[in-house]
Length: 329
Image: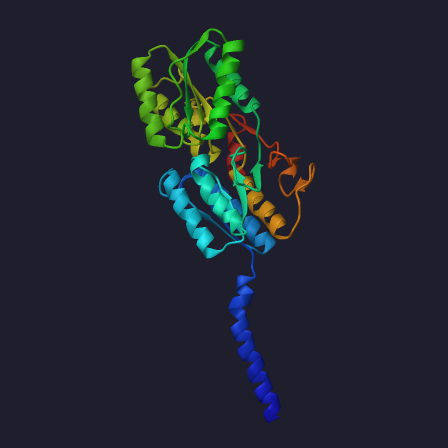
Protein backbone atom coordinates (compact mmCIF):
# COMPACT_ATOMS: atom_id res chain seq x y z
CA UNK A 1 0.00 0.00 0.00
CA UNK A 2 2.85 2.38 0.91
CA UNK A 3 4.50 1.71 -2.46
CA UNK A 4 1.19 2.29 -4.26
CA UNK A 5 0.66 5.55 -2.37
CA UNK A 6 4.14 6.75 -3.35
CA UNK A 7 3.45 5.81 -6.95
CA UNK A 8 0.18 7.77 -6.94
CA UNK A 9 1.93 10.80 -5.45
CA UNK A 10 4.53 10.56 -8.21
CA UNK A 11 1.85 10.36 -10.91
CA UNK A 12 0.04 13.39 -9.49
CA UNK A 13 3.31 15.33 -9.34
CA UNK A 14 4.14 14.42 -12.95
CA UNK A 15 0.64 15.41 -14.03
CA UNK A 16 1.02 18.78 -12.32
CA UNK A 17 4.34 19.36 -14.07
CA UNK A 18 2.92 18.21 -17.37
CA UNK A 19 -0.14 20.48 -17.12
CA UNK A 20 1.56 23.65 -18.43
CA UNK A 21 3.36 21.66 -21.10
CA UNK A 22 0.08 20.13 -22.27
CA UNK A 23 -1.50 23.56 -22.28
CA UNK A 24 1.37 24.78 -24.47
CA UNK A 25 0.50 22.02 -26.98
CA UNK A 26 -2.79 23.78 -27.80
CA UNK A 27 -2.54 25.59 -31.12
CA UNK A 28 -2.38 29.35 -30.61
CA UNK A 29 -3.50 31.82 -33.27
CA UNK A 30 -3.19 35.59 -32.79
CA UNK A 31 -4.85 37.87 -35.36
CA UNK A 32 -3.79 41.51 -35.70
CA UNK A 33 -6.36 43.77 -37.40
CA UNK A 34 -6.31 47.41 -38.49
CA UNK A 35 -8.14 48.92 -35.52
CA UNK A 36 -10.13 47.70 -32.55
CA UNK A 37 -13.53 48.80 -31.30
CA UNK A 38 -15.36 49.32 -34.60
CA UNK A 39 -18.25 47.08 -35.71
CA UNK A 40 -16.42 45.49 -38.65
CA UNK A 41 -13.60 44.13 -36.54
CA UNK A 42 -15.86 43.40 -33.58
CA UNK A 43 -17.66 40.97 -35.87
CA UNK A 44 -14.38 39.57 -37.16
CA UNK A 45 -13.39 38.90 -33.54
CA UNK A 46 -16.62 36.94 -33.05
CA UNK A 47 -15.71 34.75 -36.04
CA UNK A 48 -12.17 34.24 -34.75
CA UNK A 49 -13.42 33.14 -31.34
CA UNK A 50 -16.19 30.96 -32.79
CA UNK A 51 -13.83 29.07 -35.10
CA UNK A 52 -11.29 28.74 -32.31
CA UNK A 53 -13.87 27.17 -29.99
CA UNK A 54 -15.11 24.80 -32.72
CA UNK A 55 -11.59 23.68 -33.63
CA UNK A 56 -10.27 23.49 -30.07
CA UNK A 57 -7.57 26.11 -30.61
CA UNK A 58 -6.69 29.25 -28.67
CA UNK A 59 -7.54 32.07 -31.09
CA UNK A 60 -7.79 35.77 -30.29
CA UNK A 61 -7.75 39.19 -31.95
CA UNK A 62 -5.54 42.21 -31.31
CA UNK A 63 -7.03 45.54 -32.41
CA UNK A 64 -4.76 48.61 -32.13
CA UNK A 65 -6.27 51.86 -30.84
CA UNK A 66 -5.65 53.54 -34.20
CA UNK A 67 -5.22 52.42 -37.80
CA UNK A 68 -1.44 52.78 -37.50
CA UNK A 69 0.99 50.34 -39.14
CA UNK A 70 3.57 50.97 -36.41
CA UNK A 71 1.10 49.74 -33.79
CA UNK A 72 0.51 46.62 -35.90
CA UNK A 73 4.25 45.98 -36.07
CA UNK A 74 4.48 46.20 -32.28
CA UNK A 75 1.62 43.70 -31.89
CA UNK A 76 3.17 41.31 -34.41
CA UNK A 77 6.54 41.44 -32.64
CA UNK A 78 4.78 40.57 -29.38
CA UNK A 79 3.15 37.53 -31.00
CA UNK A 80 6.53 36.37 -32.32
CA UNK A 81 7.96 36.71 -28.80
CA UNK A 82 5.07 34.58 -27.50
CA UNK A 83 5.98 31.90 -30.08
CA UNK A 84 2.42 31.51 -31.33
CA UNK A 85 1.72 28.90 -34.00
CA UNK A 86 -0.12 31.17 -36.43
CA UNK A 87 -0.23 34.92 -37.00
CA UNK A 88 -3.22 36.43 -38.79
CA UNK A 89 -2.93 39.94 -40.21
CA UNK A 90 -5.29 42.49 -41.77
CA UNK A 91 -2.68 45.07 -42.69
CA UNK A 92 -3.07 48.82 -42.63
CA UNK A 93 0.11 49.10 -44.71
CA UNK A 94 1.24 45.75 -46.18
CA UNK A 95 4.75 47.01 -46.97
CA UNK A 96 5.38 48.13 -43.40
CA UNK A 97 4.38 44.81 -41.83
CA UNK A 98 6.12 42.65 -44.46
CA UNK A 99 9.56 42.57 -42.74
CA UNK A 100 8.12 41.50 -39.39
CA UNK A 101 6.04 38.82 -41.13
CA UNK A 102 9.25 37.54 -42.68
CA UNK A 103 10.72 37.25 -39.18
CA UNK A 104 7.63 35.36 -38.05
CA UNK A 105 8.02 32.85 -40.86
CA UNK A 106 11.72 32.48 -40.12
CA UNK A 107 10.71 31.60 -36.56
CA UNK A 108 8.47 28.80 -37.87
CA UNK A 109 5.19 30.69 -37.45
CA UNK A 110 2.52 30.33 -40.14
CA UNK A 111 1.17 33.62 -41.54
CA UNK A 112 -2.39 34.04 -42.84
CA UNK A 113 -3.47 37.46 -44.12
CA UNK A 114 -6.99 38.69 -44.89
CA UNK A 115 -8.32 41.49 -47.08
CA UNK A 116 -4.80 41.85 -48.51
CA UNK A 117 -4.24 39.37 -51.37
CA UNK A 118 -0.96 40.98 -52.40
CA UNK A 119 0.53 40.80 -48.90
CA UNK A 120 4.14 39.62 -49.09
CA UNK A 121 5.67 37.13 -46.63
CA UNK A 122 2.37 35.37 -46.06
CA UNK A 123 1.57 31.68 -46.44
CA UNK A 124 -2.00 32.32 -47.58
CA UNK A 125 -4.44 35.21 -47.90
CA UNK A 126 -8.14 34.53 -47.32
CA UNK A 127 -11.03 36.49 -48.84
CA UNK A 128 -14.74 35.97 -48.24
CA UNK A 129 -15.44 37.91 -51.46
CA UNK A 130 -13.03 39.52 -53.89
CA UNK A 131 -12.86 40.98 -57.36
CA UNK A 132 -12.64 44.20 -59.35
CA UNK A 133 -16.37 43.77 -59.98
CA UNK A 134 -16.87 45.07 -56.43
CA UNK A 135 -15.72 48.48 -57.66
CA UNK A 136 -17.94 48.24 -60.72
CA UNK A 137 -20.96 47.22 -58.66
CA UNK A 138 -20.47 50.25 -56.46
CA UNK A 139 -20.34 52.52 -59.50
CA UNK A 140 -23.49 50.97 -60.97
CA UNK A 141 -25.25 51.51 -57.63
CA UNK A 142 -24.16 55.15 -57.51
CA UNK A 143 -25.19 55.77 -61.13
CA UNK A 144 -28.59 54.22 -60.48
CA UNK A 145 -29.08 56.61 -57.55
CA UNK A 146 -27.80 59.84 -59.15
CA UNK A 147 -28.92 59.24 -62.71
CA UNK A 148 -25.38 58.75 -63.94
CA UNK A 149 -24.60 62.47 -63.70
CA UNK A 150 -22.69 64.94 -61.54
CA UNK A 151 -19.59 65.01 -59.39
CA UNK A 152 -18.70 62.20 -57.01
CA UNK A 153 -16.01 61.44 -54.43
CA UNK A 154 -14.25 58.21 -53.54
CA UNK A 155 -13.18 57.31 -49.99
CA UNK A 156 -10.68 54.59 -49.09
CA UNK A 157 -9.39 53.37 -45.74
CA UNK A 158 -5.89 54.57 -46.59
CA UNK A 159 -3.77 55.25 -49.64
CA UNK A 160 -1.72 52.13 -48.81
CA UNK A 161 -4.68 49.73 -48.45
CA UNK A 162 -4.36 47.55 -51.59
CA UNK A 163 -7.90 46.22 -51.94
CA UNK A 164 -9.61 49.55 -51.31
CA UNK A 165 -7.45 51.26 -53.90
CA UNK A 166 -7.82 48.43 -56.43
CA UNK A 167 -11.61 48.70 -56.12
CA UNK A 168 -11.38 52.49 -56.39
CA UNK A 169 -9.25 52.16 -59.54
CA UNK A 170 -11.78 49.75 -61.06
CA UNK A 171 -14.75 51.95 -60.15
CA UNK A 172 -13.20 55.09 -61.62
CA UNK A 173 -12.11 53.35 -64.83
CA UNK A 174 -15.58 51.85 -65.19
CA UNK A 175 -17.21 55.26 -64.66
CA UNK A 176 -15.11 56.83 -67.40
CA UNK A 177 -16.13 54.07 -69.77
CA UNK A 178 -19.81 53.68 -68.90
CA UNK A 179 -20.93 56.93 -67.23
CA UNK A 180 -19.20 59.82 -69.06
CA UNK A 181 -21.56 62.41 -67.54
CA UNK A 182 -20.11 61.72 -64.09
CA UNK A 183 -16.93 63.42 -62.87
CA UNK A 184 -14.53 62.55 -60.04
CA UNK A 185 -14.41 65.65 -57.85
CA UNK A 186 -10.81 65.10 -56.61
CA UNK A 187 -8.31 62.37 -55.86
CA UNK A 188 -9.58 59.74 -53.43
CA UNK A 189 -9.78 60.62 -49.75
CA UNK A 190 -8.15 58.28 -47.14
CA UNK A 191 -10.89 58.75 -44.53
CA UNK A 192 -13.02 55.62 -44.77
CA UNK A 193 -11.90 53.96 -41.54
CA UNK A 194 -13.11 56.93 -39.47
CA UNK A 195 -16.71 58.05 -39.04
CA UNK A 196 -15.59 61.51 -37.92
CA UNK A 197 -13.13 62.05 -40.78
CA UNK A 198 -15.59 60.88 -43.45
CA UNK A 199 -18.34 63.02 -41.89
CA UNK A 200 -16.19 66.17 -41.96
CA UNK A 201 -14.89 65.44 -45.45
CA UNK A 202 -18.42 65.01 -46.79
CA UNK A 203 -19.57 68.28 -45.25
CA UNK A 204 -16.56 70.05 -46.76
CA UNK A 205 -17.19 68.52 -50.18
CA UNK A 206 -20.87 69.48 -50.17
CA UNK A 207 -19.98 73.08 -49.26
CA UNK A 208 -17.27 73.32 -51.94
CA UNK A 209 -19.24 71.46 -54.61
CA UNK A 210 -22.95 72.29 -54.71
CA UNK A 211 -23.22 69.91 -57.67
CA UNK A 212 -21.86 66.91 -55.74
CA UNK A 213 -24.16 63.96 -56.41
CA UNK A 214 -22.45 61.02 -54.75
CA UNK A 215 -19.91 59.39 -52.48
CA UNK A 216 -18.49 55.88 -52.84
CA UNK A 217 -16.66 54.45 -49.82
CA UNK A 218 -14.44 51.38 -49.73
CA UNK A 219 -13.98 51.41 -45.96
CA UNK A 220 -16.59 50.38 -43.42
CA UNK A 221 -16.81 53.71 -41.55
CA UNK A 222 -16.93 55.94 -44.64
CA UNK A 223 -20.58 55.35 -45.58
CA UNK A 224 -21.61 55.94 -41.97
CA UNK A 225 -19.85 59.30 -41.70
CA UNK A 226 -20.93 60.37 -45.19
CA UNK A 227 -24.50 59.25 -44.54
CA UNK A 228 -24.66 61.24 -41.30
CA UNK A 229 -23.43 64.36 -43.11
CA UNK A 230 -25.99 63.92 -45.88
CA UNK A 231 -28.76 63.31 -43.37
CA UNK A 232 -27.76 66.35 -41.31
CA UNK A 233 -27.86 68.59 -44.39
CA UNK A 234 -31.12 66.99 -45.58
CA UNK A 235 -29.36 66.24 -48.87
CA UNK A 236 -30.41 62.61 -49.43
CA UNK A 237 -32.40 63.62 -52.50
CA UNK A 238 -29.32 65.02 -54.24
CA UNK A 239 -26.23 63.27 -52.75
CA UNK A 240 -26.19 59.47 -52.93
CA UNK A 241 -23.92 57.44 -50.61
CA UNK A 242 -22.92 53.86 -51.41
CA UNK A 243 -20.21 51.68 -49.92
CA UNK A 244 -19.03 48.81 -47.78
CA UNK A 245 -20.33 48.89 -44.21
CA UNK A 246 -21.90 46.80 -41.46
CA UNK A 247 -25.71 46.68 -41.82
CA UNK A 248 -26.27 46.93 -38.06
CA UNK A 249 -24.25 50.16 -37.94
CA UNK A 250 -25.89 51.74 -40.97
CA UNK A 251 -29.48 50.46 -40.69
CA UNK A 252 -31.10 53.77 -39.74
CA UNK A 253 -29.22 55.60 -42.51
CA UNK A 254 -30.34 53.06 -45.09
CA UNK A 255 -33.95 53.37 -43.94
CA UNK A 256 -33.80 57.19 -44.07
CA UNK A 257 -32.28 57.12 -47.55
CA UNK A 258 -29.03 58.79 -46.45
CA UNK A 259 -27.23 55.64 -47.62
CA UNK A 260 -28.69 54.41 -50.88
CA UNK A 261 -27.02 51.01 -51.23
CA UNK A 262 -24.14 49.01 -49.89
CA UNK A 263 -22.29 45.75 -50.12
CA UNK A 264 -20.76 43.50 -47.52
CA UNK A 265 -19.22 40.19 -46.89
CA UNK A 266 -19.36 38.85 -43.38
CA UNK A 267 -16.27 39.96 -41.43
CA UNK A 268 -17.08 37.15 -38.99
CA UNK A 269 -16.59 34.67 -41.84
CA UNK A 270 -13.29 36.37 -42.64
CA UNK A 271 -12.16 35.78 -39.06
CA UNK A 272 -13.30 32.17 -39.27
CA UNK A 273 -11.36 31.64 -42.49
CA UNK A 274 -8.13 32.96 -40.95
CA UNK A 275 -8.42 30.54 -38.03
CA UNK A 276 -9.51 27.54 -40.11
CA UNK A 277 -6.71 27.97 -42.65
CA UNK A 278 -4.22 28.54 -39.84
CA UNK A 279 -5.28 25.26 -38.20
CA UNK A 280 -4.96 23.46 -41.56
CA UNK A 281 -1.37 24.68 -41.86
CA UNK A 282 -0.51 23.61 -38.31
CA UNK A 283 -1.96 20.17 -39.12
CA UNK A 284 0.19 19.90 -42.25
CA UNK A 285 -2.73 20.22 -44.69
CA UNK A 286 -2.56 22.10 -47.99
CA UNK A 287 -5.54 24.14 -49.27
CA UNK A 288 -6.97 22.71 -52.50
CA UNK A 289 -8.92 24.47 -55.23
CA UNK A 290 -12.67 23.90 -54.88
CA UNK A 291 -12.46 22.75 -51.27
CA UNK A 292 -15.44 23.46 -49.04
CA UNK A 293 -14.89 25.93 -46.22
CA UNK A 294 -17.31 25.91 -43.30
CA UNK A 295 -20.04 28.58 -43.76
CA UNK A 296 -18.34 29.89 -46.91
CA UNK A 297 -18.81 27.05 -49.39
CA UNK A 298 -16.43 26.12 -52.21
CA UNK A 299 -13.45 28.43 -52.60
CA UNK A 300 -11.04 29.26 -55.39
CA UNK A 301 -7.47 28.43 -54.36
CA UNK A 302 -4.60 29.96 -56.32
CA UNK A 303 -1.44 28.32 -55.05
CA UNK A 304 0.84 30.60 -57.09
CA UNK A 305 -0.73 33.76 -55.65
CA UNK A 306 -1.32 32.21 -52.23
CA UNK A 307 -4.99 33.20 -52.18
CA UNK A 308 -8.15 31.47 -51.01
CA UNK A 309 -11.23 33.28 -52.32
CA UNK A 310 -14.94 32.84 -51.63
CA UNK A 311 -17.89 34.55 -53.33
CA UNK A 312 -20.16 35.70 -50.51
CA UNK A 313 -20.84 39.35 -51.46
CA UNK A 314 -24.21 40.60 -50.16
CA UNK A 315 -26.27 43.65 -51.18
CA UNK A 316 -27.48 46.10 -48.52
CA UNK A 317 -30.56 48.19 -49.28
CA UNK A 318 -34.03 48.90 -47.87
CA UNK A 319 -35.24 45.48 -49.00
CA UNK A 320 -32.43 43.49 -47.34
CA UNK A 321 -31.40 45.56 -44.32
CA UNK A 322 -33.68 44.00 -41.71
CA UNK A 323 -32.74 40.46 -42.72
CA UNK A 324 -29.01 41.24 -42.65
CA UNK A 325 -29.27 42.85 -39.25
CA UNK A 326 -31.24 39.89 -37.93
CA UNK A 327 -28.37 37.66 -39.07
CA UNK A 328 -25.98 39.63 -36.87
CA UNK A 329 -24.20 41.53 -39.66
